[in-house]
Image 1: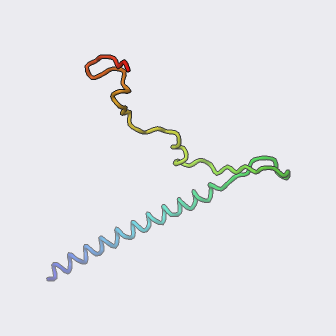
Image 2: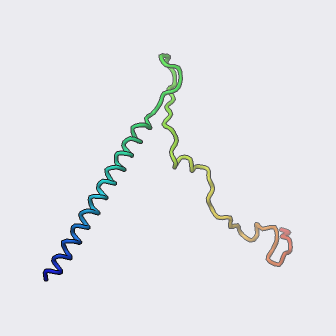
Image 3: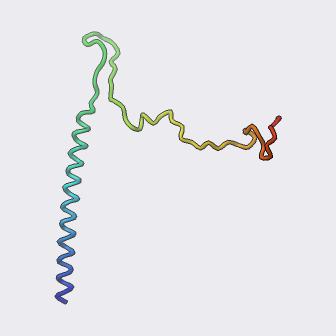
Length: 92
């Protein structure tokens, strides 16, 4: 019985040490994200002092840069191919 109690104590200490490491890592990553969020504020462009349209630049995002990329498959119907399976040309 004492052997099981000792094993449980070792397991508990290991678990608490791992928990402390994960909390430290989460705190570090949270600080990084807060620092990154504070540097990505909008900047004004255009003449100041004059009544005009104001343009704000929020920077670019990784998601916005993905627009326009076609990552679809290269599949197309057989009729759209230049040749049939036997090698003959489609005539219609």
